[in-house]
Image (cartoon, rainbow, N blue to C red; front, side, top):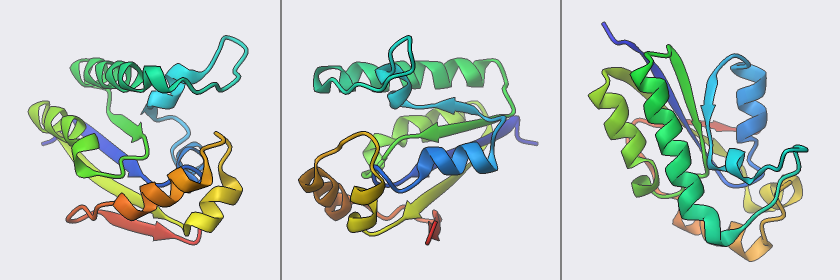
Length: 143
């Protein structure tokens, strides 16, 4: 029997990842690089020089959650390419967790309209172009 469940959420900025998680899984433990781009007042700020550090911190938090046998853990990042979430997959398998990958599918135009992190339009189109399919992922659209 598996120790718990890991849900990896993928999608463009503005695809509704965080909103979906809050609505469907309000009590989940959430691992997200975005959590490290929020100041003490709750304001989001983006520092491209901290992208790597923020993802490393998210992975460390994830590993701690696994070590503590937390039953339900959600990874909330864009994860456009498989290599971006491979570490999460490997760690979940090492700790004997069941893993599901969900991709929230929206057009780049909708993502641009919804995007609250002010990601430039050209970056959203680039992310859309490099989005890799992951075998067995669950696709959700029209959110």
